Amino acid sequence: MDLFSNPCPHCGGLFNATDLAAHQAVCGPTVSRQQAVEFILSSGGKVFAVEAIKRSTGELRLYNGRIGVHAYVNGRGMAYDPTDKGLLTIFDMAKHGYRSVAVEGITRVKMHGVWHRVSD
Ligand SMILES: [Zn+2]
Image 1 (cartoon, rainbow, N blue to C red):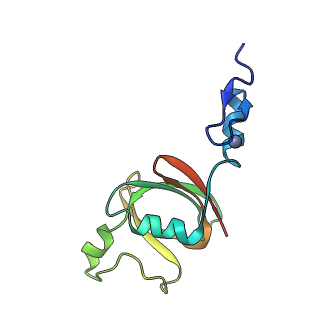
Image 2 (image 1 turned 180 degrees about the vertical axis):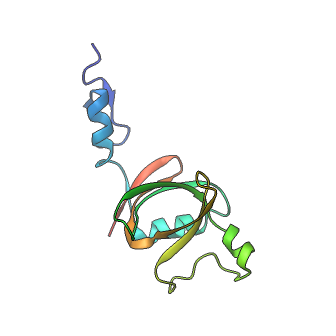
């Protein structure tokens, strides 16, 4: 019997395996949108994970990417300009190409190995 034997690492609630996954989408630590952006911008070329709603299609997407490569490529000197349409340019490790992530579409970011929900 392993019903309700899986603890949520955040709140300690007990769930079966299926419900735990659903629960963790709504439970857990939160960060502000600004904190999430600052975390991504200070990642210094390390791979990070972020989940965001794609501005053009409205679909939820998971990105494993790096930031900072772009600045090297285009010589602009800054990977992110906050006035530049609210877009983060990241190098998507899975797609091997640059992707724009809309700051207002970020739903979750993995920080220090733990998924954080982004709240406004
Ligand atoms: Zn929980």
